[in-house]
Length: 172
Image 1 (spheres, helix red, strand yellow):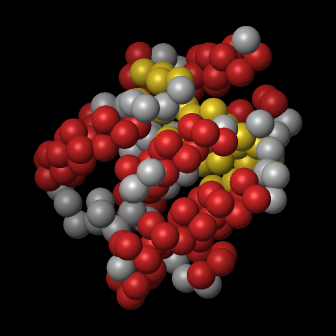
Image 2: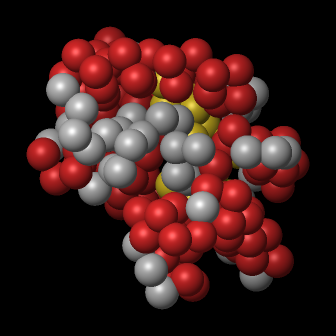
Image 3: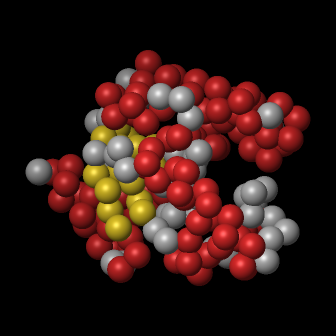
């Protein structure tokens, strides 16, 4: 079983993935970290020097390698992975996709200074600029995210409740 956590940057894919890992005893991988390891560069550097198309192909290669290797566990995906080409359909065919839906306002409230600075698209923006940017991005990305097998609105429930809902879903 592969669980793919999808959603916008800062929606909790990595942090909730760690909670799920502890609760279920499954392996957890992060596609950004796997790409960085395979490329020997940070996501920001790959975007800067190689471009987004190159990065998205590297993300897809990571998904294909996990599937080919028979990976079983949790995959915290990058925020843009689900919206590139047929990645969402591919993940739906080989595993269970879970969209962690959060509003831009909640994402902003959850972001630490480190979390904000490690994401090149968030750097240098005021709170107002960042909210406008996130609203625009989510308008484009949400139709892809909503193709997930399970959609959880995380805005009004705790992270513990999100984990409980995921566990209930996969055990059903």
